[in-house]
Image 1 (cartoon, rainbow, N blue to C red):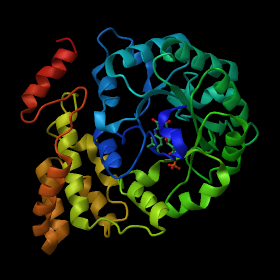
Image 2 (image 1 turned 120 degrees about the vertical axis):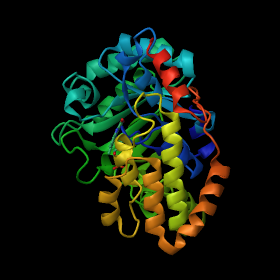
Image 3 (image 1 turned 180 degrees about the vertical axis):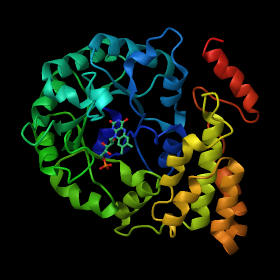
Image 4 (image 1 turned 180 degrees about the horizontal axis):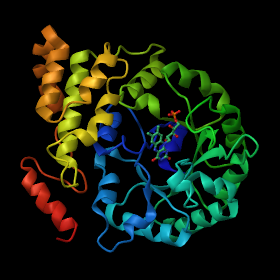
Length: 370
Ligand SMILES: Cc1cc2nc3c(=O)[nH]c(=O)nc-3n(C[C@H](O)[C@H](O)[C@H](O)COP(=O)(O)O)c2cc1C
């Protein structure tokens, strides 16, 4: 049994979300109560280059505090995926390797990976077999599926049984089909059937938006944990709210706006320091979608989003925070200090620096073999 399910524990898992759940955002969620974290998915082949690809390694980077931490892979060839998993385990020793059998994106599906494997269960099983054979003696291998390709092909229970037979240690079920994408209700009845059909822990995922949603589903579904996706985007405090509600029956108050801005600034600054990718240290364009996600539940978010689309530098972001907070802006500095002190710097496996981007530039160039 994976230890985070032991002794009746009921983990809250941050869903992997490509382009959002980077190492810094995961750290925020961990500190607000997420129990288990998973990297964004990465194509297994990208780890097969002898030196590795800097972007791929950056995506799966994590801190020790983030354990238990999984690295999620996608692909369609069990032996290549097994080899990629072996390299990741050698280098980073994550707590588990997770296999993506749910992504609906055309570029993934067209490569016979992600959710397309729900239409080819023998191949899905062979991918699991390849990875379990390569690293299963060293770390647990888990998987994440959707319930099927479309309404007429709900295969979650069959897939779950096959995966269990191949040695998969836990399964997350996203209760939507590939055709649904991210729309419509998640089928928690199907998730419930899967949980009843297999002996491995099943984590339920899909449409959890609040602490009350978790409490409502808890008694009926038979799942052993919940995974929270979009409700956590830009709002890591959702985990604190869920835990607080489950423990006391009351949802804790939302963080004050000063704390939210201090968190956004810390996130931005820390992420810039941590990126290994050249050209990302000074200009914030690449981070705007992530920054905009933090405006969820903020008064005036409609006005803020276009303003965030214009920020180019960290100083622009600070000025926007001061402008937004107006009279309350004076408190931002105090909050920023306390956030900085309580969160400190991040020590990741690819631990970058405090200070000059020139150093980062050199290390990234080295990683690229220049
Ligand atoms: C922007 C975005 C990126 C995602 N990236 C991944 C991914 O890399 N791997 C994965 O297994 N699922 C991915 N998902 C799916 C989520 O993990 C989750 O299953 C889905 O959002 C349903 O949960 P929710 O209704 O709580 O959002 C992504 C979803 C979103 C919205």
